[in-house]
Structures are given as structure tokens and as C-alpha cells.
Length: 268
Image (tube, rainbow, N blue to C red):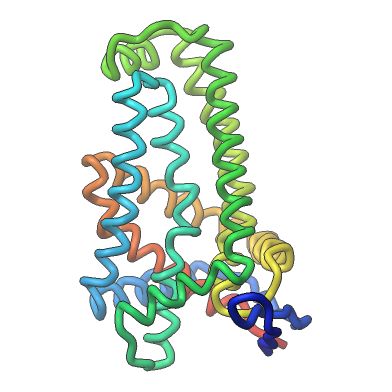
């Protein structure tokens, strides 16, 4: 139950203790959730594509800005780490799927209003956690880059890629960076895969949401980590053609993530 108290410019949610039941996931759950996500995308394609476009533009501007500033080594970090912030940006897609599940009519304005209202809830704190992990990811890439390649000057992105793929130091950077990145990605996936839709759906604090998310992953680690790997692989493939694929893949995965949450989490 959501209770509110008055403060400042309006009511502020007060967290009431709730008991959540975490059901182990199966591959059928993942398949069903993905199918439901694809169905939601086809039901409201224009609004879904809008969120995909915003995500793609954000990524393209980020990568272009780093390239223009000659921070080529950061382009690799941003390109690989960029999908890590996707759960935070998918709030609108979660809300769309929630409304469609309840057969509730809604407009784009209704969805944007829900997103705006998250500033008074715990979503902001969760966003801070996501961005903090992203910062750690960028910092460790910088550290590994300094150790393996000694911040050599690179004339262009092609020159950087040539060094990464054809030199011993470059291969070492990719190997170590991938290993460390896999650990950070697993941690971030574990604390966000259920937490983000849960925070949008119920009035819980972000610590409870993260704990519930980790419990969900631990309840069925093989299935959940396979889902995480599939999401990451699809995101990276979508980024490849100048972020064009992100416009479609991102909203489908956002809708699917909501349906997976719905299948795994219930209130006792």
C-alpha cells in the first residue's frame, strides 16, 4: 500500500513494509516475457520507438563527443558500458507495459507524467547506483589502458582499433578489460534486473529493490544470467550499425523486462 505525507510542493511517498515473493525463473518465463515484450512493442510502436530513439541519440552523442575530444580510449569504455544504464532509461517502457497488462488506456502524456513523478521516489537513488557503477567501469578501463598501453597517442579511432587488435598490449587490454567488465556487468545486472521495474510498480526503498533483485538472480542464476547475456549481446549488436538497431531493440527489451518482473515477483 502506498501512503503519502505532505511536504514542500506536494505529497511524498512513505514506504510501507511489504513482503515480496520471489519465484525462480525458467527459460519458458524468459521466452514468454520476450514474446510479450514484442507484442507490446507492436501494440504501441510509435511511443516505444520514441524511447528507443532517445536512448540511441543519447548513446550516439556520448560516443561522438568522446571521439571529437580525441578521447578515443574512452569510446571503447562508453560503447561497451553504455548498455549498463539501459534499465534506468526504460522506466517509460515499464509503465507502458504495466498499463497494457491492465488494459488501461493511456496517452504519451500519462507515461511522461509517471516518469516525472519518479523524482519524488527511490528511482533517483537507483539511478545514482547505476551511474556510480558506470563510473567505476570507465575508471577501471582508464586504469587498465594506462597499464597496458601507457596512454599512447592515437591519431584516430582506426589507429586505436588497429593497436587493440594487432598488438600484444592491445590484446591484453581487451582480455583484462573484458574480464573486469564481465564482473561489473554481472553485479549491475543482478541489482537492477528486477529492482527497476519493482521501484516503478511498488512503493519500496531502493535497498529493498536491490536485495529483491539479487534474490531473484540467486534463485535461478543460470536462467537469469543467460537472460542478462542475451540482453547484453543484443544491445551490443544493435549499437554496431551507428546505434540504428537500438531504436527497435531497446524498447522490445524494456517491455520484456517488465513482463519478466511480473512473472517472478508477487506481493505476499
